[in-house]
Length: 183
Image (cartoon, rainbow, N blue to C red; front, side):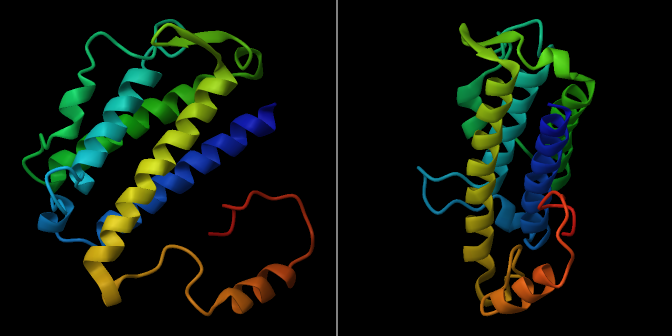
């Protein structure tokens, strides 16, 4: 199960990197752009993701993941004055998550924790968030890609470059490695 902990840390860091590489391509104004009133801006998604991380991973093993101090509804409004504030909050959420993951051991994985009074094993709770955060980070990437259009720098295998990527991968010796190791 230690390989599980190492794998999830790498996966969370991979999605953190995707979100950051998408945001780096945008102007400050674009980070706050909304398609319409019912849509989220990247800044709103950052507010929600970081707010969720802080709630879920503060006192992870000992308190409910939905903290009394969390106001989820307010996460879907823009509360940042600028990119610096937004990035500070993004980093605060990730620091909370990653610090908690670093402190977990194999013996913690089958412990029961609660989110809104629903019991989860630690593994289930982590997997829940590993599905939730990439869902929203994918939205961030989609928004950024629309805004950049032809100027978008791809975050994955470029169009018409799958053959090159596969040739590089298959030129390596077979070995156990994580898919994020050579990004």
